[in-house]
Each structure stands twice: as structure tokens, then as C-alpha cells.
Length: 86
Length: 86
DNA sequence: TTATTATTTAGATATTTGTCTAATTATATA
DNA sequence: TATATAATTAGACAAATATCTAAATAATAA
Image (cartoon, rainbow over the protein chains, first blue to last red):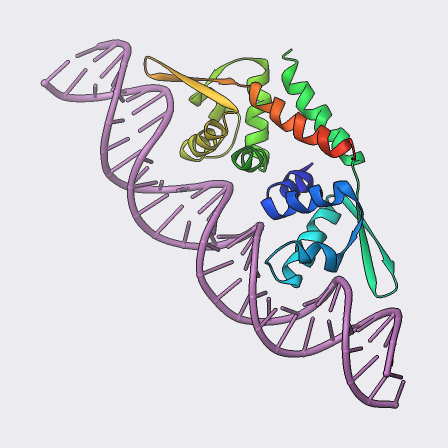
């Protein structure tokens, strides 16, 4: 869960997640949405990947990224245990 | 949401939240669960409070803290919008 | 093969964060 | 009033983080 919370604790990364909600995008397309340099975006993608929030697949020169919502189940479960006070 | 994600991005703070899930505790009781100094715990409590994850009430010398799950609704909503790809 | 494009890696740097000790504030009690 | 207890604030410092530019890697196209 540590890497998950870490990954979510950044506005740029949350925006990337929301971009990928609509459709898969390659690294360049993602970077185009931000004023930040490509290496910085690459770094954010790496953190999201480590948290398993996104996955990547190389297609020729491009690297396609897609959202991975499975890991969010764990987060929801954790939140729900808090809400159901025992 | 920024302060919420920030607050959740720390193991000690998540443990504090889980402690408060069971029952309200004062600052000293919370600190007793950790090896960390009281000022550090106080600092964590402040961050949790700013995120509205906990609230505090002074009772004599003591300050009682209690969990505030209302704010977690927003988090769940955000997660759910990600899961329902549009 | 050479040049171009897409992406990541490496290394530097400023900012943020978590932690500590010492000092302060506020309340309770002898 | 003087002392003890609970908690926070202040200030310092090391570690982590986000960002940048320059260099490296990989694939495509001339």
C-alpha cells in the first residue's frame, strides 16, 4: 500500500491517471498534456508503474501506457474498514 | 484532495487512523503506541487534522482525537470515477 | 549506414518532509 | 503559589522528492 499512497500523492500523477481513464496513451502523448519536461513525466510514469496503477507495453518506438484499476480495490477495501467502526 | 492524499502518504499516520478506528484517544495515548517522540506525533496529528481525517477536542489538560470518515467519501468517489472508464 | 524520433537513465539541485531536542503554553494539584 | 503533567511550537537537520539538462538507448526512415 505504501507505493500506492505515494503514487497518488502528487497532482501530476493523479492527472496522468485521469488522462488514462479515457484511453491508452503513449509517453509522448502524456507528456504533451503537461508543461513539464519529458524526463520528469517519465519519472512519474515509473512511480505509477511501481504502484501497479498503470502498465506499459512497447509498440515500436512508442511505449503505450494504460490504467490498471485492479489495485484500487485494495484501497477501497482499506477505506471501507475505516468507515465500519468496530 | 491534495491534503488528504498527503496525509495518507505516511505509515505512522495510517496507523494513527487505524488506532482511532476503534476508539477516541488523547495525544498521549496515541504517542504511547509509537517509539517516536511526542512532538513528532503531534506533527502527524496536525497533518491529519488539516486533511480533516481527524478532529480534536480539548478536555482539561488532554486533547482528545477522533476519526472523521466523512472526508473519505470524496476519496471513494474519486476512485470510483476511475474504475468506471468512460 | 546515417539521421531522426521516442523514451529512459544519469546526475545535479532546490524544496519538502519526517524526525529530533529544547522551549513554550495550558491545565491540574500540592 | 509553586510544581507537575499534557500537549504544542520553534528551530535544526538528514533524507526523500520533484524537477531540470545532458547523455544514452532503441527503433524508424532516408
